[in-house]
Image 1 (tube, rainbow, N blue to C red):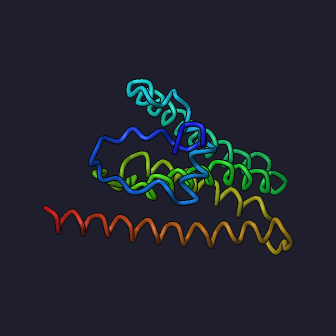
Image 2: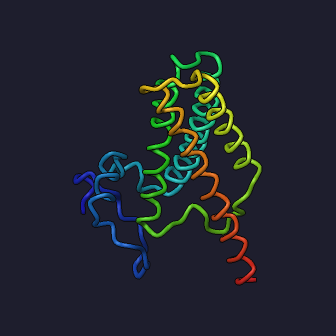
Length: 178
């Protein structure tokens, strides 16, 4: 694939055992990210840009979560649809980022402690959002906003269970490996 096809620049060494970059998702992500740009050929530029992008992405996640939680506490039921939309705006790119790296054989959890202080803060911000959403909807209110609040509670419970399962699985894997 050439750099003019919108795909990523191939910077791999001869004999490098990387997953193929020929899936539709990886090609689409490469075109969206303009990874075929000659800028990515120089290793230092690429490394600095990747670090800067990670900092900016994390800042976007933190600010988005704080803003969404504040929206439901300050704006109440009226703000709930906008806060949920904000969560989607920050959540979908996060999922795409993880999916892209996984498609290329890189897991975001490799060599990382699963339960870190930042994960606890993320969980607390999510809890503040869910509690604020439930508080914002008057008891017995149906419709879109009431259903959204109920869905947020169910989703939060499912997410909490998945986090516990992931933490326990990571601990078991560490015990088995070391």
